[in-house]
Image 1 (tube, rainbow, N blue to C red):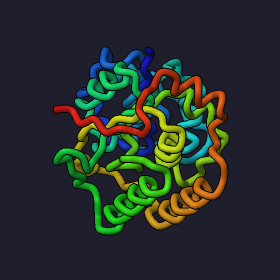
Image 2 (image 1 turned 180 degrees about the vertical axis):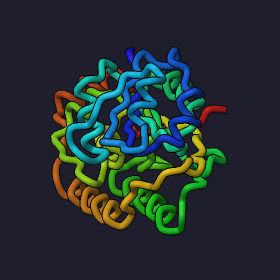
Image 3 (image 1 turned 60 degrees about the vertical axis):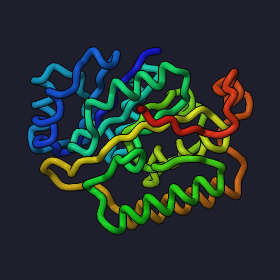
Image 4 (image 1 turned 90 degrees about the horizontal axis):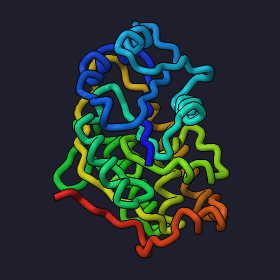
Length: 247
């Protein structure tokens, strides 16, 4: 198993100065930073830090994922937010759980006493509502369907016939893993407040996109090919995604 830590960046110099020094390079096999046109010195700071950084060709977080995946060598991808919302010390736990044979491991903000300090009322309600909908409609057992900080096998995304658009990869991954009964675990993962900069979230627009995605996935056949899903899920005895908090 080869792991890639994928870090999308756009004007996050304050977070980078605080977070990068806490990431140990030997935790993963590869670290890739995709810069979306930062004007605050983020690109230059990452370069000086000695990490592989690419200038993003298209705008937006979805483009950052796609362009990062195009150059990543890992078969397990761990997206990581450099704004302080993701705790670097959780990275080894995600890698450890993936080595146990899971298809996706989520650092849940709402499991086992974990909490989000970055939630406001709207985002907290949206996370609860969309997670509840995905669990009810697709048979999931998630506590957090939307968080970015998770590890997943890239072959799952490569098998999708989707355009995640503003809804993002995370809700789509959660839906598809539940629909295809892939092996999923969660570990508790606090979400601290962001460090400097401005949030890139468009809460209402993203919420509407996620709702449309859930409806589309519920009324249409699964977007993961049956043969591909069988190859991913082979020898996976669990009938539902399972939650495995670390104790």
